[in-house]
Length: 182
Image 1 (tube, one colour):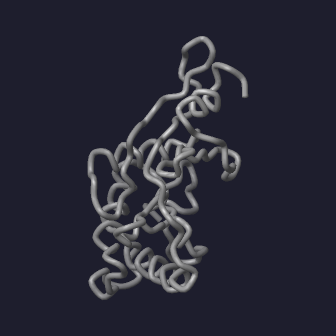
Image 2 (cartoon, helix red, strand yellow; image 1 turned 120 degrees about the vertical axis):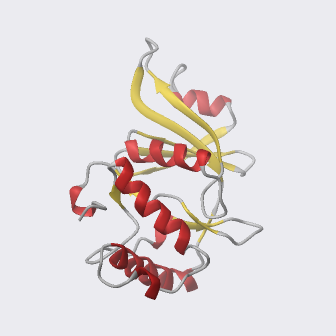
């Protein structure tokens, strides 16, 4: 790890690199197991972190730090590090039902049926509706499912101890195919 890099800074703060998600996001886990740091160049990740800090709730991750990554000259390099609580994966027995529910609600939000006809699932409905509206307000694309969409159950996790279902990644940037406007 090169001194002065974001990976080095996180290592000094007690994080070890765990994985890379796609081409734009690196994930680090704290050595004590309580937090996760995501380093990403996607505007949607920064917008969601800010939203969660301003709107704490049972269905949103608890954000402890938002850090703008800077290059060796001190200028922003286009990436942001977001540190949040560590969450557990949705149990495999729930993944299919959650994915189907997210797809149905996403379709309803796009006008396929009245949203009121879609039952709540794990107390997520109000949070997902709020996130849909925020995606539109912020000009972001939707990444939680809808018509002709893959299951997005992977974008929901479970808070240890409470069992709350937590939306971790509802939006993507610059992808008109998944736009909330569609």
